[in-house]
Image (cartoon, rainbow over all chains, first blue to last red):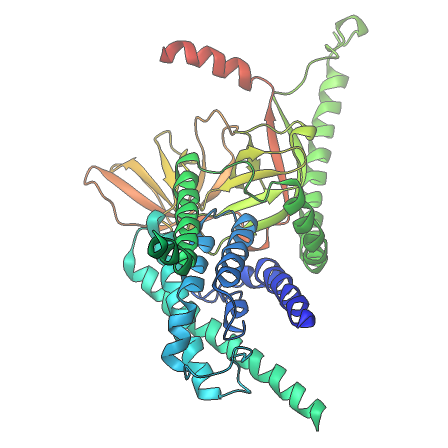
Amino acid sequence: MKIRYLQEVFIFILLIMLQVILLNRINVFGYATPVLYIYFLLKLPFGRNHFYTIISGFLIGLIIDIFLNTPGMNAAATTIVATFRKPILNLFYDREIFDEFVPGMNTGASQFVRFTVFTVLFHLTLLFFIESFTLFNAVDTFLRIIASSIVSILIIISMDGLIYRKKSSEQT
Amino acid sequence: MRNLFNFIIRNSHWMLATLLIAFSFYLVFAHNSYQRSVYLNSSNKVMGWIYNTSNNVTSFVHLKKNNQLLLEQNATLESELYLLRSTLNDLVSSDSSNVVAFANDSIAQSQFSFIPSEVVNMSFSGPNNFITINRGSIDGIKPDMGVISQRGVVGVVSNVSTNFSLVIPIINPLFRLSAKLKNSDNYGSLSWNGKNLNEAQLGELPKHEVYNNGDTVVTSFSRIFPKQLIIGFVSRIGESKDDNFNTFEVELATDFKSLQNVLIISDMYYEEQKALESVAKR
């Protein structure tokens, strides 16, 4: 159980570093920027405490904001997603699942893909619309949302799939 | 009463969420009106250090290209120096009044001096573009100083900490600069419409302005930049908001995506000029 928390802290820091140092410099065709740190919220266990989810979501957003000079934008979007994580989970997974269950490609690929697509779209829609308080054209915003979502979802799913494959080959 | 407590306990996570979201939005709006809050940005010490380390790696990758650029620049300067030296020699040999008593004032300085600096971080993904550089107040940087690269104008310093400063580049919607075509005296205003990282818009130029594609765009009257600094080149005529004026699309001379080394312009007479002009505004 303790190891699980340590692991989460490690993933938390790793995702922030990855986002800030590498991913935020990628800008495919001027539209698609992968936003990966939401992966942290996707991989929290099913029955995790609401407070833990919301505060960690807020913190990850705030730290990203501090690095990217966008005070509040990522924090607001991520906190909203963290707040609605449980209802979104209930949309795609069975309510009777045990508390330690971690969503992932190894525990129901189709459910995880649908869960990821929904969460990432939700998160990026919020993020880009909060950002567009200072932006001019809405068509541009929509293109950014769609393009960034596609890139982010692809990276998250393939990353999760790779980790899962490594673990299963270790077991056998 | 007990029901009330139960209600509060059962829904306390919603309240926490509302509180945090409200706080985030407060940050968003505070940020918009204050431009950059001093504590939450990459000119901060810790963030600056992290970016500096990661930049050491990236600058190594770009080393070759920058080296090439420096060599080319060196060559042009060398030839210029040679030319000037030979003219000077001619003048000295022909000037009979060259007496030591008329030696130049040794404290005379040029108005502008340049502080070299390195880019440690930049963000060009959203509309709020910025650049962080590794010189700060300790090196004499102040807000409103101009920043140029070897090729042309980059932007203006907006925020300074001890060791780092934040630069608002041309490709930020808030950036305004008065500019003109090199062979003309009519000046217009340069801004960026948020679409293309390599193109800014030079507006408010009169209709009768004669131009060719490829014309050089240089700085005009500005308290921040010296005159005749290259900004970019006219690539085509753009859409104009007003029938009386032309708008040009300007291809920027600076390549922001591969920007590594910049120079900060320090103007000796900046404070003096500012003080004088503030009298006129009163």
